[in-house]
Length: 421
Image (cartoon, rainbow, N blue to C red; front, side, top):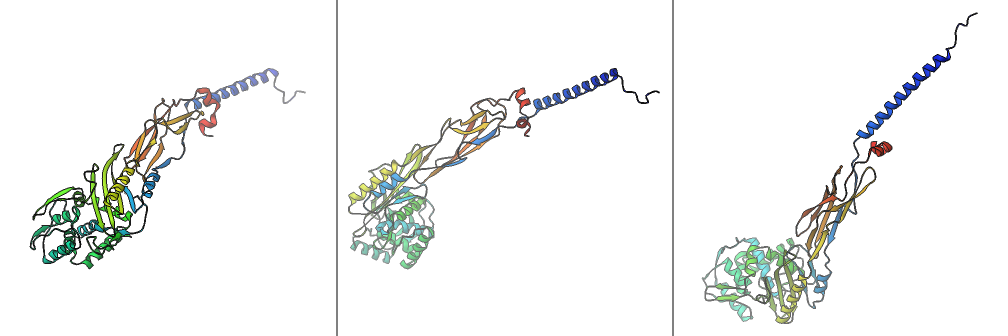
């Protein structure tokens, strides 16, 4: 009887096996070839970037030397610069300011009745009341310049006489011409002082003859900043002398620093028997190419010589205080780039940046890194932005080594890194 389902012959089975093996081999080759091609063609992930340290850093100038110089003074003293807001003082108590009051008088009146820089301004006709004040000030050993009633005096002439030789009668006449009476003047000063944060400043009249006119040394320095910020006042207080009509002739500044120190920008003296010898002074200079104006206030000195010596000492101490600080050093490591195959490439500053800072000031540096690709050493890798009172700038960041493409066999052997799996 014939078998209805005969088994394949051994020859047929071997043929089918060879065919299956060939098929599997072909499939494997296709898979391997496709994987290799995919590895060879896959785009490389960009190097991972990291900033070394904090991306933003702040560098502060040390104020210790300035504070020490001020603290070494035996009487009320303040120091600072025209730039900035910082002030170093050894006392917060108000002290009699005498004729430094005239700076306040002029600033408050100019706010109420502005005077265009360089102009003569409105004319004031000298009155009998003005003449009476002149006689009173002369009787009290004050500074005054008699002129005939009916004389026409410009606003600028009144300011020059009030601020250069410290004439009490012209300061009072100027305040009266703007405010009318002492009560209105005092109210205007109080309002002005409040708006400018001068909490210690009190004036009872415009000249400084009243010993109750007072301010802390720090507030006097703030007044000096405001005075130098007004073009008209800054010009007048910087004049060692001026020529006036009506037989007055040449008047000289009471500021003893004129002729003794270079680049004096003036400001104002004050002296009474109670207040002692006072001086708010300004001197221009430079530090590592940066133009600066130094400010010093000395109050309550016993003699004119002491006032002079202490002012010179404080200004000299300010000379040494500005600091040239390396904000970014050439070649400094700013960050690191790590390539997909683990190569660590330092990123460094391609230049340097320096800031000249006075105590109380700061400079900042902000590092920003840019995406890198394959390329030679020295390619741009980011920027360090520097911001400082002495000027802003950018320092390029560059690579220190080639960002190279890994080889084919590394690609094949590292699919997770290559494809992000």
